[in-house]
Length: 379
Ligand code: SF4
Image (cartoon, rainbow, N blue to C red; front, side, top):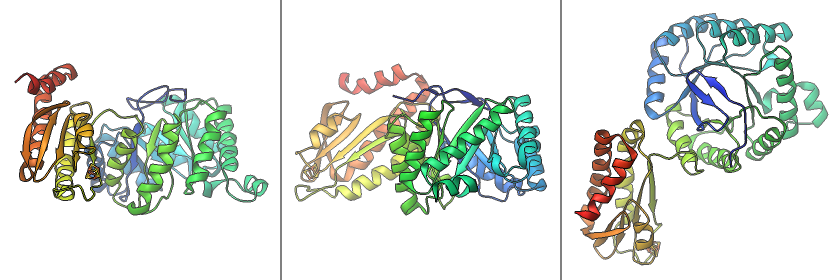
């Protein structure tokens, strides 16, 4: 069950109060290079990103933010540190949200200038506290960065912003320590009903960062916590989006794309399942974006190595194959539709998913696509 939270709007996208958990990322181009930044925004959008954050470190970047805003419709968040005037400029330029740390934005006057500008344009402010940005007195109290310190800092800054009359607030309390991160969000979720932006900060390169983010965000989402997510990887940010989507899919927060099931194989397997599963997963990856753009519901595909667990998993999928010796039994919607040779398995699965996707473009309705799934049984 999702935690109850208030709702804020980021451009046209709702965050909180039961709205679907949104996926966001951050550009890593030089913001002043508007063409490169816009190109990356388009790539992120194409991959399924719904909110893009851009750092605005100086006046030139603030001017570039203005130009970028004019050329993209996607909700944009301006990420500002140290200089409240840049935040005010970004808000005037059309930012849909700003991310600040009130502790470093320029004292109470700076916070007031930002909250006044945000309130005027009715945009939310994210108060983003990281384990590296906890105030000195809080650090002294706890001895070192910890979940309690992160939450105390976030709530202190929230009070300051509330005092200035702004209540469109999103909170984050990120750490690169997954356990600390998890505990901080649990504590924060008990103490406030503002929507939460969740992420594991500085989680590293994809090899470790995907695991850290999956554990950290997965645990929170399964506990019903999180209204918008960011997977942070030391890599092209476009790579963050499919990871975020998989996390949402596997926590019951996203009904779309491909749910791919294949077994690890064992000595009972008499087909080259590893190669077949790899080929299917790769080829379906190319169709998935098309499915998502059309708003298709999730399609489950199962490719299993033998008759032990194969028929059960394959018949539970939209399209499945339970392999035997050089051949497999093909299932559509739980019903057997004959056999398929090993050499044709990948083509058969991919062509079925492609046909379903093409058909969806024509009918555009979930019920009609469901009817198409049944056609095979009637044919
Ligand atoms: Fe082994 Fe069959 Fe299970 Fe695959 S489905 S792991 S081949 S027993």
